[in-house]
Image (cartoon, helix red, strand yellow):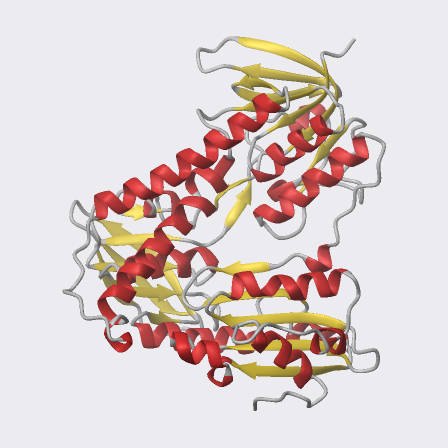
Length: 466
């Protein structure tokens, strides 16, 4: 008889949530984890530590430049980077220890080592000392996440040329930082080190920042980041990076062709995306189908091999922790005989810069490409009373609604606290709501969220305060 009902390989957000939900539903669950701590990239070297540094660096920046306008006279703040890094590590430790507690609470068995699928119902676990054991199970869920995507011709040494992992561990603030890639990770970590004193240059192959997000939002965000001191070189490709003991020289040239230029840097951050992590899983030998590195699944997270499933960054869809969590809950419920489901049209995305950028649903570009008739409602934070009081008037809220039915198809926010405000749009869309539904819902005054309501009202030209 199988030892377990379910073995989950990987304990990132998708994996640990899947394991906990399955245990709640009465399954005998085990996890396989190759690292010393649970939580995967997100909790250890991704979402959580980056947000700790983003928040701390934002406070440092505000103390140095924003307090005076509120009548708060303080000496120039002094950076204690070691203490800031200690705060980051304490945050990480609390989160990973929390996962360990939840595993114990839910009686989940943990196998330490690298997991390899030997076939349906069998997982081989290789410990750090080389010893192996085979675990029998009814079902297997692959939740091994993603890893840093390499840039051809550029070697990441995590000292001078760093990935997001190394960028979270710098011992000193670089004088000059070159960020390769103007996506979420590059802009977030570039923001951290700019606030702490670095000169930041962002090099992007495309002619815009934040590919995939609403174009109008991205354009306005770039203006704000430029005003803050970031320099952007768009439609530009990196042709090489040479390093020495003291820094690096980045060679660039226009995508359309032209002269090669060089940029000197103390640190180079490579943030050109992530790739599914399936190294050593034995997928080919086990007969599990893949496409472009991702595990192929059906609408119920099943691979082509009976009893083997996959979720999170290793499968199709956006590489977002909360997407993996929802998939983890869904497959756990399916395995327990319930009807787990993920609505991929209502998965929000957030960029934790200042101001924050948050979105859910379709962009204008996507609606135009699909030939969908839609209406737009926008409201700027400059017209919001709470934003004026807080001196957080940058940005706006934008709603996209079906021109005939008024059903909300997308919502986009650029502004302070956007990552928190987006969720009322998510709930609205989850239940098929219209802009009028939100526009007729009372919002407390004065709050930043009133701008969300006003943008919904603006779809039909009914915004009050503009």
